[in-house]
Amino acid sequence: MHKAEIINLHGLRKVYPYFFTFTTFTKGRWVGEKILDVFAREFRAHPAEEYQRSIETGKLTVNYEKVPSDYRLKHNDLLSNVVHRHEVPVSLQSIAIVHMDEDIVVVNKPASIPVHPCGRYRHNTVVFILAKSHNLKNLRTIHRLDRLTSGLLIFGRTSTKARELEQQIRNRQVQKEYVCRVEGRFPDGIIECNEPIQVVSYKIGVCRVSPNGKDCKTTFQRISEVGDCSIVLCKPLTGRMHQIRVHLQYLGYPIVNDPLYNHEVFGPLKGRGGDIGGKSDDQLINNLIKIHNAENWLGMEEGGILPIANPIKCEVKNSRENESLTEIEAQQTKLKSTVDSITDVGHEEPIDPFDPTKTTFDPFCHECKVNYRDPNAKDLIMYLHAWKYKGVDWDYKTELPNWACKELIDYDTL
Image (cartoon, rainbow, N blue to C red; front, top):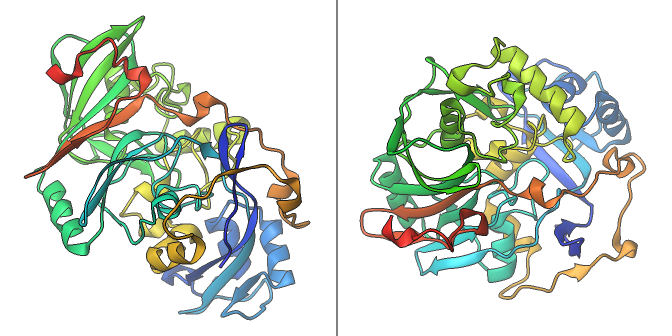
């Protein structure tokens, strides 16, 4: 297994490009289709020409054997694709341990770092970084946070504790509190939003308020004003995908730097009151793809499209029909053995400066031929922070980020 080399370049945590093998078994709906057609349609991270070349050179195989591009997939065929992997840079900010015992680990996740391997992220993820820096392996996810969301993240260290906490969350016995900064002067008092939320597309990870959606409930309270913005305390009583962000968009007070839900792709009103400019869901998705291709430095993610600047699809648990090779690989391979094999034990190695002699190049790699700009600081943060979680017999909270104006607000009274 490849041992990734991490570097500090321009204040970012980067990974030298490396070769990696994705594997997955043929899905039932692929049976009888040509392998090239399946990859060109399902895994749009690369153009069809690149998959054609991979098949011809033997990098893309079936049952570890070379096949022609018109090979028709059969049940239980094992697909393997060797790629030259370019990970996306993330913040160099360390992951602070809030609490740790024999059963759980609680951390303060920096913005920009995904929780699990997904899309173009693997070594630059919370689980891999914790394994390398703290020898914390075989962690079990209790809940999820979007890549750009910072704050409290809980992992179980035992299956028993993980099931216990997951059950508390399912039974709505866990109180969650988030802090965000929104555009405009948020109304006085406690504002409750009960609008149902529908996932428009799991493939690109976008939701909106819709009568066809699932029941949701979030309460909001303005706790301070900063210029023409408001600091708002958010309490989601349900746990839908992007719930806080979508409800704030609907109310007309989007998070100030939300790259997805505070965007005119949702129409002149940016989705306020559910108004998306008369677009159909398909039109909205197509517009998101166009904007992504024109504006986004990140390139493709999740084997498909990255909407504006993100919500990663690995945050979604129930989209089996829309998984990419990365997700399948992550789910079918025990994360413990993967992490164990590529990390050191017990201490964090210093992150070295860039060494051009360690850079690998693949003449057939599309990524090697594209000069992506490094993200700006504003690309790596969204003003939404998971602050407090309280369960049946436990509660944890994190330090607040500077944008939450912690010096001006007495959070202890909330």
